[in-house]
Length: 77
Image (tube, rainbow, N blue to C red; front, side, top):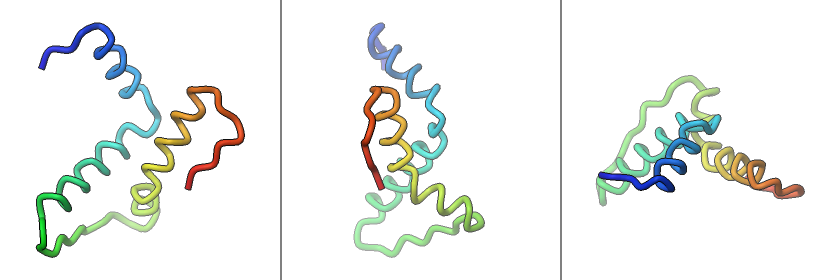
């Protein structure tokens, strides 16, 4: 896939985000659920702290975006 300058800039910004790893894990988790269809999907998670970080990944992403946009008083859970 060829990215134009704007696409590369967006990708570079995403890679600088403090929650890049969590986003990648959440996307892989979402893909496993989607591809599992009506099957059971069992995730063998790391210790509790890592699991809590995974569960909070989308909130962390939204908080970081709000911070980058300079929004104050924004609450994500």
